[in-house]
Image 1 (tube, one colour):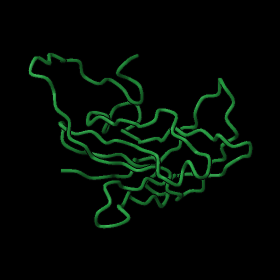
Image 2 (image 1 turned 90 degrees about the horizontal axis):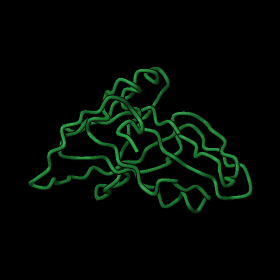
Image 3 (image 1 turned 60 degrees about the horizontal axis):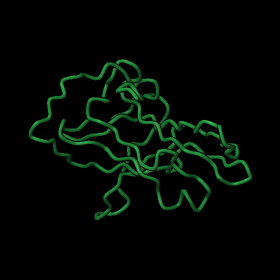
Image 4 (image 1 turned 180 degrees about the vertical axis):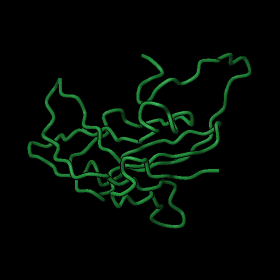
Length: 149
């Protein structure tokens, strides 16, 4: 079963679940859960983590790939990690309930405001495969970045 859900801290904040724009769209549009103004990026700055207010549940042999929408770079917004990978065990983790955040920077020389409800990224469900000699047994113990460096 694949589905999006609203995380508990955003239950009463009129969050829209992600939708595909057309019947043949691969990606589900992710919206900003809050209005945030991004200052122009300077070397050494950390990216902004834009909350979506949602989490995703899907089979253990899949991941959710978070990618920039084509309109992002036109506005000067880029995902700092290129793409985001959300593993299936991120769902309902003890740190943040699996809340999906989108890392963005503003490469223009002016502030850019992202309004609540603006589409900021796309989520694409993907299957992955493991090698026959994979022996990984470690379990996720936290949220964002918890699997180590």
